[in-house]
Length: 167
Image (tube, rainbow, N blue to C red; front, side, top):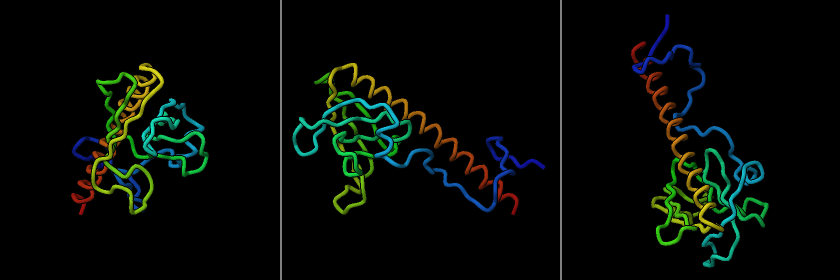
């Protein structure tokens, strides 16, 4: 007998031995390794108080990743968060500047990482086209990941309701 949840999705085929979290991240978790596998858009960022430092926004499909290309180790990762936890905004005053608002620590688990608030970071690109490419990518990735997470959440709710009804 088929077991369907409120949204009509079949929930009977799920494995009872492994529950999946609706917020489970799929895909790449090695943020530094991502820099070599995905396109990058060069930019400069505020770390160290100067905009002269070169960085790169990695066009990752599920994460916002900003790296220092000169540092191949994990220390070169300045931002690494799921894209659904970040908002990208173009700055009206400068056609080359993009503001990232992130609700999460930007990277790492050190006590100095901001745990509850919103971090805001400005990235400046070489030209308005590069900024537009980055903005379009970040907005598209966020929308795609939000749809994926919503779909997972619906499936999780359907399974939970079906399990509760079966008991």
